[in-house]
Length: 452
Image 1: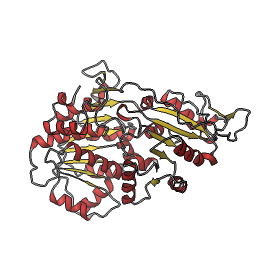
Image 2: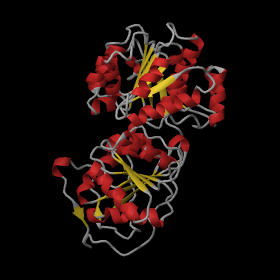
Image 3: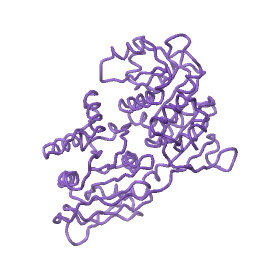
Image 4: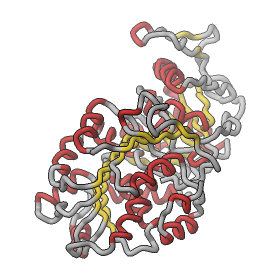
């Protein structure tokens, strides 16, 4: 399928062609038609599946077809997102796809002065992309009115819940007209998000693509057994000796991210850290430098990395394994996008063996251990059948001290697989894909659609 077959207007097709996109990703193929039709939509999809284009393209189409705002300068669409980085990414996408339309947009978020944002709103915008805190602040000051909103899009709803924004989200929703089109996207569907969806969506179309457990299939993965005290030394070795030009590095803590970036810089490796305590201007600058290959390593915490979308990112390195296996899949999903090659390298000390076991259980994959590295520790993986309460670390008899240099440890090319499944149905059809008009469909023609 091509984008022209989705009946998008010519200005959008021209912009997509200029961006080099020819075929929609599964979620774009499934979501764009019902959104164009005016339906509410519940989308279960994570970052990297192309969900931003799945909602921004039909939104731009509908606003363009509707003509100028009535009254003039009224905000007609609101996109609510949990982080500043993701808000900026969505703004960039709207700018790119809507370049040949007259649709106006702006992005507002906290951590910077509000005056330029308010001035932009006063000049008139059709689409407002916002984080909850700054939006509520401006609403309380009487500087933003949502009474003319026609389309409301809630992105990454589960992350809103994780970050404690769900009450702010409800406050915003209370100020939006009841008669509107609503789109809700979430990587997971915990009970609280399902409850929210049921309360704000009217007979929605349900779209689900690439289940979290299978996202890792197209990405090459390796695990490095290493004592905790040698992790940063191993990181410096990989970045210096294996030809990695750019890597997104994950740390479990803000302090750890700062420490890693500082050590890399001292070793002559261009690196910066980003996390919630960094000023917004600092985070934006670091991300820009990383995208432009001015940094070899961007060290991030999980929340700060949400929404980061970097073209042609070949490597993700987990210095610390996350204690939630879903977080691991989200992390490594930053690479290997839109069918491109990607490699995820993870460091694992003895205390993290249970985390590795849980990751392999979720992804239904055995992650190969890279022994050809100078800091290899002799651990044994925990059996997949073990329980967390009874985990015992098993080591082979050779001790756990690092061995001498044995090679680069970068690994080979990832195995390439086809695009994930996508299906498009009403929520009451989730259990029976053969009922009604839904059912599973597999994408064709490759996966070359917009990554955002």
